[in-house]
Length: 483
Image (tube, rainbow, N blue to C red; front, side, top):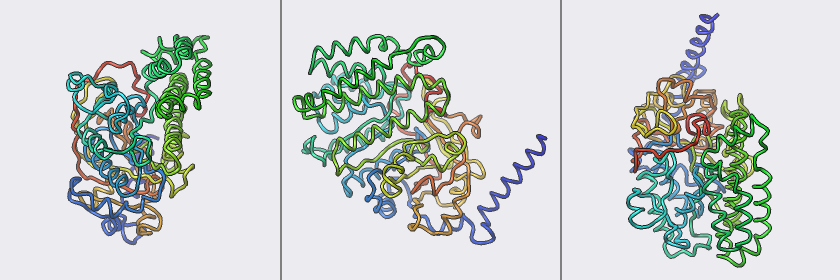
């Protein structure tokens, strides 16, 4: 039986590989790609290619730009360059990232020169922040995901772009975090805000959050305790705290800082609520925790858009697994998982939300072997046969951009790419020894992404630190492998 299964698998793979070269006896998928893509020499010389292929992406409300790993320099640089173009040429005024809200907000304070300079954070070596008395951001594992020279360069560019702009004006560009892993930090942020605006309500928050704060240092244990014992948790308390805070929206927004600080406090309270729920659901299965997390990121994005006004337009930075429509991948087919890309398509429409993925064949990547371990520079293995990456590599074109939208590319090529193929996902964990099982799933590329940025060979990000701080987050929280 096992021999038969292997034979069937071999024949299936052979048929698929032959299809890439001889699609139904007509022009091969490789030849169609070669005739369609727009090549560029290097990421440093890609601006014209990005402008030509992605210029009319300006009509969307949300532009999602993904990366095939959380540690590849070219992905970060390409994403930053496309984002700069969207900001300068098409009025996008939000950069929303797969990062914790409090950390990203300290960056937002820096790039928009909001409030107390001591609460503003730069992306810089920790010793520099300490000497200058500034906030330090993105200190939990994996620090290299945001603490790298590629993000540093973009943050400094954004601060300069915002020079002289009123923080409340729509043309100032904000930097936000969409994720929900900041349980303890968000609790402290809510209390700190209330201490400034309403002392009695701050005391109420201390009381309601008090027991949960004890678990904040090890939230996975909190979730486990609610699962295996009669412990009910603190859902009612955190929900009521959010309701009480929302009831003060008009009063606090009118009295203190024109609503900008209230908006931050509200979001931190929502992080506490959803994080509390997340750590309880993570033990029920991958789908439940994944869906809760991506739904939180989507709902945060929607609130940020509403906060910035009717003309607001957002660029989202997240992993390919989050931004590519889950309905076009085995994540959706076999695991009933959704993601922020799918939810944006459903809310804003196929033209109102557009997704671009970044991918590679081989090179080096910044990653860890296991959760909480130090960063390593690791060799990325050549892509597997019958994968989207192997097909791109087979074109022999080093770097290119590809518009996959219906009506914007060769129809025959788009049809050829609709075959299910493997697709690689490398998060912050990379395990080459179990490459197929750990880092691949199936996808239909033209239904998953509206555009692709391809680099045949890539290098690791310029991390500011290699050693990682200790953290209690569990490895399966961002399953699979730190996505």
